[in-house]
Length: 299
Image 1: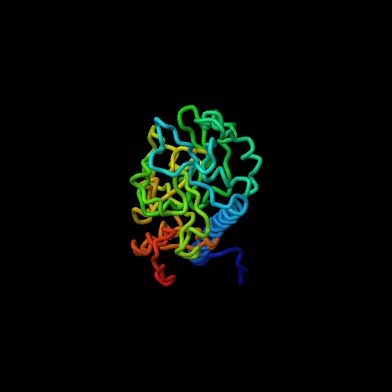
Image 2: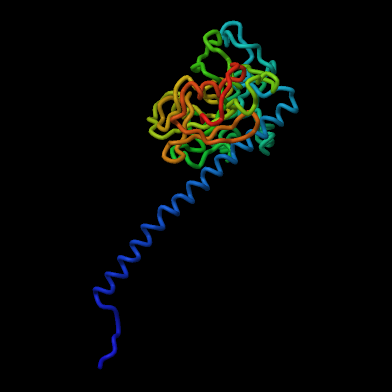
């Protein structure tokens, strides 16, 4: 009787089929582990931002403004509070850099002249063009760390402060200014009468589906060094969360295919909020002193 020296064709096909089945079973598990790791990184970023904001408040007796922009008699901004830090031009994400161990970047940034981005972002190697790891959500594959606008280069951020329920505007007279951060805001913990655990402080937004253009929104609205545009530093709840890029002023993400977005609450906790959250509950969570009672089971 002859001994066998190899597999028959049928045996080989059976082995290949078994391997294919095992791979099919394994891939979803690997993907789930990857999504969990990405979500943990994003939530950790927001935790770090939360610690930075509270350490800033301890040092300054207030949270940083959404943007600190000294008023100009001719050009405004109009209808906003006076700048809490007179003579300085800086953004929310610039303000907390020293508190996320990026103080070396902050000390190099010019903030005592109008249009400081012309200095801070003048080239791909400029200080304002640096990528800050804490400011990038790894779930947003469409978000570059650095982008160019004209001759300027900006480091970008996936995260921004909550400005409340009003749509973003340059005119403070049409804004309720009821969130944690807005133009020249100077909110203190005691001003959050709805409760720190019931108030959005920071969140993320999605760049998926963004159509590039020659406008300022070509940066995705997330230049952490831009001290002029609120949309570079804050988002609002005037519209529901967006899984796809619709407007740079709205929260959203690519977590779980856009189903959830991570939010930092004013007490420092971070929670994933589903995009189907009731709009009334969503907006109540975005105001600091609306007098509403929000049941945690509703989100």
